[in-house]
Structures are given as C-alpha cells and as structure tokens.
Length: 119
Image (cartoon, rainbow, N blue to C red; front, side, top):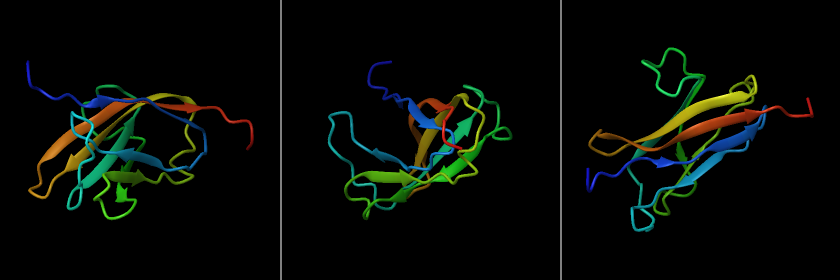
C-alpha cells in the first residue's frame, strides 16, 4: 500500500548481563527529529517473532526521556535480571502511545543476546 509507514526494522545486540540502556531517537520519514513530549513508550522482548499474547514476554521496559522529549530521545533501561537471559536470538518491538492513547509500533527486529566471557 502506498503511503503506509511500516515500523523501522533495527536489530539490537547485547551481551548477556549487560545493562547499558537502549536509546532511540524518534524521527519522521524525512529524518527530522520528532518532539515526543507527552508520549509514552514500551519495549517488549519475546522468544517468538509473532507471539499470540504477552504471556511469554521475557520482559517489558517502559521508556523514559533522556532530556524532556523535545530531542526525540527515549531510553529503555534493562535490569541485570532482565538481561540475564540464555544467549539466543529473541524478538522485540517498540510501541509509542500518544497523548490520545493511540498506540503505534515504531520499531521492531531481533533482540540478540550473546554469551559473555566475564561472569
């Protein structure tokens, strides 16, 4: 369908146990940063690419703003327990919820957790 905007596909790769935040910058189709003030965001990770529900989600992170949202940046901070997963390829999506409560998936892809050496 012409004119339909699909979620951006981006793979995220982390070592098991790494808790560095996932930071995204929300931009429109032309690449211009969007003011996301007043919106909320969530990132869900699941073992399946097309789950039928949320029962098997490994975790769900709520986004926070790096500054005040005017720069389009959103941070997701996983805990050590959330990142203590069996190394594998999982799947994620990020949804934004606007001020009217409308939900839109803005990003999706693989969430790869690799084995670390340091325990």
